[in-house]
Image (cartoon, rainbow, N blue to C red; front, side, top):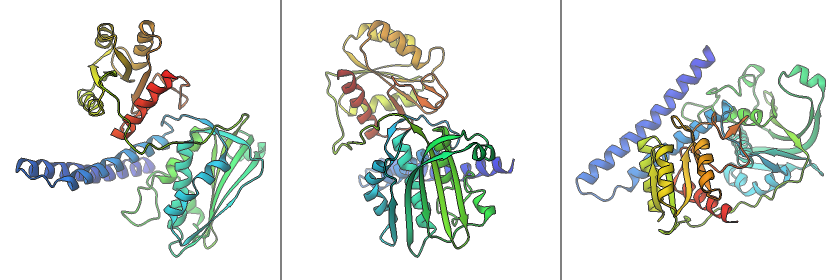
Length: 376
């Protein structure tokens, strides 16, 4: 009950702060516009920043609860860490010396690559904060085998082969009672206002949801090591090329999208955003209306549908749509994974998913990806 109270209290505190920023800035923006003022960009920017922080907090809560939608792929961790080197150096600063010890012939693992990058970055930033005067961070990979004795001492951890990613800092370390609480939600040793206390909880939830294990070792005055054990995958790693678009990908009026969403405000926002991206948009509040509009609008080139809807969910709607239009691409959107397109925390292989809440940039990219993937 104490842990639950800490979780809900911390959540209410952080969300109230973010909502205060969003509501306050939007109120000021509205007031300035009513007076005919046009220099209002800073209010919109502050509201967006706070909303983005709230979205990050929600994703971290889902990660801790092991309810975030994961899209696993075969990963070569040595390559992934090497590709992160510039990001890590920028994030940690010049006072932190980063060393990597990469095991030769490292096995492949299978996990959500974006979430693994976030986990490593979270741990690296925590290590930086533990070394305010500078220090050394060692990132190490290895092939390990957790035996039956280790599994017996750690309930829920299957014995077997794992890919190890370990981060060791030269900071002040933690006493055993503090280290034992390190993965608890909203537990933090940082001063008030510095961090949400969910970074390590997010790492823990992601690794466990991926079938792995996390362990922390720390001693006062001797630094801290966090070890991520990810299950070995028997297969070749996917290519890690991820292209970040330099311009917002737009469509054209010749491309029609059917938006299906039962929540009026969310539907209105999606329609406005897609029209701003130059698409023709047809919308419906449920499956029955959507199927009727599909029959009367053969020009529809993409179905963009919520998953959790009354009576007929998004997966069932997509199946009915494919009986009429087998080749029509479908992009799902949802804010929670306990639904028809995610099983055991993993997005089904045939599913294109955009998690709520999403930015205009994320929407634009996912819509183009869904259309191009089907065309290919």
